[in-house]
Amino acid sequence: MEALLKDKVCVVTGGSKGIGRAIVARFAAQGAKVFYLSRSEADDAAGLAAGAAAAGGSVAWIACDVAKEAEVEAAIARVVAEGGVPAVVVNNAGVTRDGLVFRMKLEDWETVLATNLTSAFLVCRVAARHMIKARAGSIINLSSVVGITGNGGQTNYSASKAGIIGFTKSLAKEVASRGVRVNAIAPGLIDTSMTDQIGAEGRAKLMESIPLGRSGSPDEIAKAALFLASDLASYVTGEVLKVDGGMAM
Ligand code: NAP
Image (cartoon, rainbow, N blue to C red):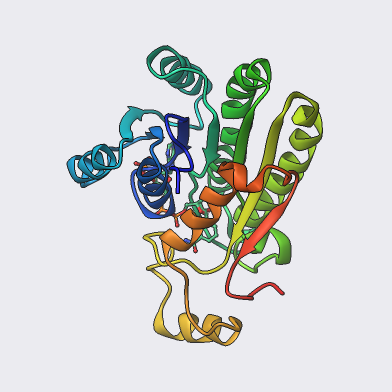
């Protein structure tokens, strides 16, 4: 089978670890020219680059805090200059600052909203301008099942992830006539550094709510992202794809 993303320029925010890193590797393995934007470089950057090259793809890191307007504008300008107009953009960078609402500092609220939601606006504002001119492209935003169901102790995080869903559907309507698709993925419990702090008791309770009876791997999200990024999803836009083992059924 022909590589699904041959020579396509792909931007992935938060590609240094976890789900983002898995998406970078999957896309590059399908021949993509991937640029990932994060504050730090992936630990195994050389391995990532070698794996990409073997598959006819490439991986380049651009240092960028996606919550900062000027850094995002500069990073996307660099992608366009060095690679060309992005065919795929994945807004994946995200953080948590959990706490009960009456104890939550404004800073923890603002950091989560800026990193998880405003970043998607900043990236799309500049990238989508190029994509609509090219009259093609796929934008994928990382939401979460808690953006659908809510979760006590995560008002800031779930508000950002619910916001991503509204943002995704609205942008999908704005750009559909120009050939650009916009979708969201809502992962359930995925094994990354974001979730490795969950204690044994909390994890056992979560497992009871997952019909498939296990957590997911970053690559299981990457496979869903590959579907939405590629022409396999050519008639899919404005969708929120849950990849959660049935957790939020
Ligand atoms: P992770 O392992 O903690 O990775 C987070 C990524 O985001 C890192 O690459 C980090 O890179 C980047 N990042 C954070 N703040 C950033 C900033 N200001 N600017 C640029 N990059 C930034 O988390 P993950 O579990 O892979 O999560 C990825 C996405 O999936 C997030 O949006 C998350 O909310 C969502 N999600 C995860 C789960 C789960 O169970 N893990 C479930 C639902 C949704 P640097 O630190 O190098 O900047």
